[in-house]
Amino acid sequence: MSITAEVVHWKKDKDGNDVDVIKLAAGTYTATIAPFLGSNLIRMQDSATGIDFFRNDETRTVEEIREEPVVYGMPTLYLHNRLSGGRLKCSDHTYMLPMNEELYGNSLHGFLHTREHKIESAETTATAAIAKTSYTYDEKDPMFKVFPVKFRADFCFTLDAEGMHYSFTMTNLSADRQLPFGMCNHTAFKGPFVEGTDGMTIRQYTPIGEKWELSPNFIPTLDMIPHGNHDRQYLTGSLIPVKQVIDNDLYNIVPGELDGREFRGTVLTDIGAGVEIIYEVSEEYKFWCMWNEWGKKDYFCVEPLTWMIDAPNLPIPAEESGYCEIAPGESKSVSAHIYARKAKIKREHV
Image 1 (cartoon, rainbow, N blue to C red):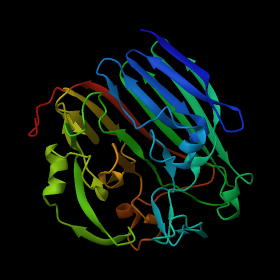
Image 2 (spheres, rainbow, N blue to C red):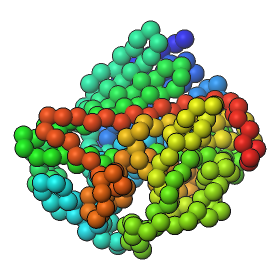
Image 3 (cartoon, one colour):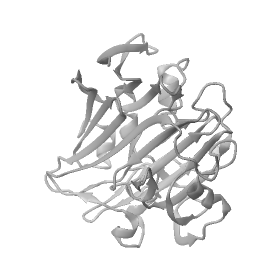
């Protein structure tokens, strides 16, 4: 099995500077990590199934991709989704963040995914290609004026014959402040993800729990919505995630079943090509948010969240909202596993 890990010049920016990425290869998989774009897993492919996992466009410039950092690849968002009025209420301080979604009066998606990260290493073992990146947040970051809580974010991407193993760790470097821990992977899957299809043969299976109602400003009302036919399609694996509007479907994550075992994740099957993507997430993720830019483009986002939308500001217990903090000197991690295979489970939709 060929295993490689290397830092390569990817493109030049508008000033003529080389922009580097990390290229990994192991078994039938290849992957590209973009440190300049917040350690985004910007591309992943599998030659055995022909799957090109994430939305990508090699013709776009560095600047064009930076303008839309959440709709390409698999970006990691810190202070993800929406904070109403820009308010971030923690146990020890309340911070007011810039409202970059002015139409709805929210702070949206945080800032970690827009920063240029440091390449720590690109190396191989006998079985895997591994990339490590990091970002240290302190007084040098322009956001520090409004959110003065030092932290370090560490990423590890391990590619082997079983696909991509992703891990993300945050460490609170502050001496005396709690660090709110709310992150998600704004995973933008291609639809279609197999060449020669139109996306209409994709079916999504995601074990979902209760559905949360959102206000017109996309903030939880704290009421639940009974599952309708649309929601039940996630459970039966019959949902077509493209060319129809999927606009912030917010659910609790619950375990389902895959291959006779407990499964926390989603399965995306192209029933025409007979191949599928398995996306499995760790138990620190508590919620799903589904979105596809109103079905107008050939991609869809399956987003695992550690806390629900606006969790710091909601008047409900942390065990319901997922709200979490990291004490000074402590760390918290999440992980995920993404891989491809021939479709082997015949669900109701096949």
